[in-house]
Length: 202
Image (cartoon, rainbow, N blue to C red; front, side):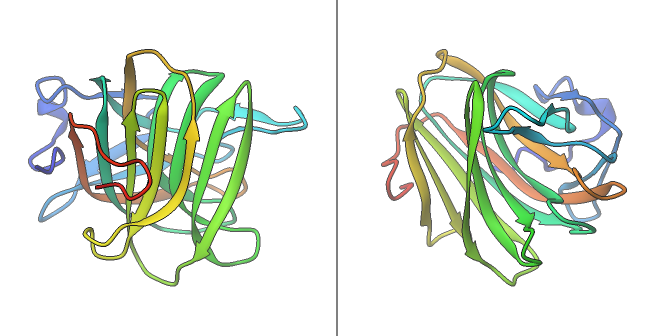
């Protein structure tokens, strides 16, 4: 079920959503939403401790227990590290994200970041497509991240252990660390309360 279907400012609370650090957003014709990020927004706590920013617009809902969260995202990719994706959040020092991002190589790829005080990040395969399906699944304190071109055939990005509280904020974010701001279209967002194989995502 696409939780973005029919979402509008007037229905936000009733649908269980909350915006943090919002610049602006709007519903898209035919479903989904477009969200804007101002400049200097990011979710990254540099491993060297030099740059710490956790300030991008974040649309979330509270999720308890094991889950499978999916999003279909189409970022505008105006500048380096512009991205939109899925964010799993406990607090500023414990969170994880999977996003479709413009890399410092000029490509676009599925990028994952896991934060335990400081962040680590990893580039996935370069993907020359306009939009991408992303998935994060939780099984206890084990998480899996996958991507798909069609929303059906999932490919592993990473699997990791991250002890987090039983209830988390799970949702969509957009960032623009190096450019003058950007937008991302989110065409699908769903959260299922079930336990999936964190390797395969199914």
